[in-house]
Image 1 (cartoon, rainbow, N blue to C red):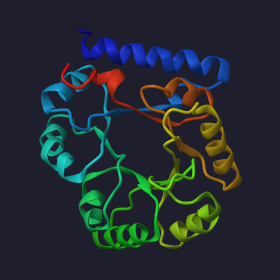
Image 2 (image 1 turned 180 degrees about the horizontal axis):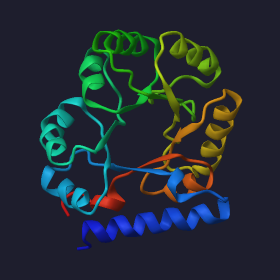
Image 3 (image 1 turned 60 degrees about the vertical axis):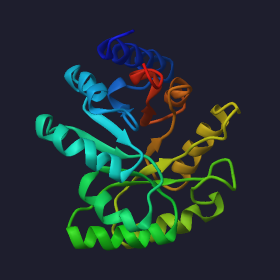
Image 4 (image 1 turned 90 degrees about the horizontal axis):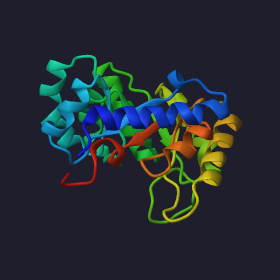
Length: 221
């Protein structure tokens, strides 16, 4: 079994390698360690190795793990990367530093209300249904400009765009398309790429990559 520090070094080396031909800086890529479903005992070694940016899928799971961890590591940055239910908006705003799946008007309304109530403005990535898949969340491509306008109207900071390409298909065209959508709409951040395709995502402009298995190992390791 590789140590957490070794896995982290390997992923960071791969990111740096892909930055060179793309003429990008390593420091411009945020590596989000996806700690969903992993217990505290598996997260702590990465924290001890110096990593400070983590991602969780569910508000309740994050509430169970992170308050104590953040007492020990107060400079940790926490990203909500999964689908967010509108009734969990206030809890998400209180706990997370970034939200990656703002994708529909009802959630926008709930988040705006929560941010107004708490006085905390959490930057959000707008999720785009980049493959036009019925079973996936995400703002429809044709509605993106209007939706981004509504996000601005309620004073929610836009961190960028996020996507999940269709499974089993080469992701590069979808990453390139998300970058084009960002450019067309004046948005800078790009949350795209996971353990199996983050190197491609870095090459095509990702600013935030969401990596779980490559850092934590397979479930049960």
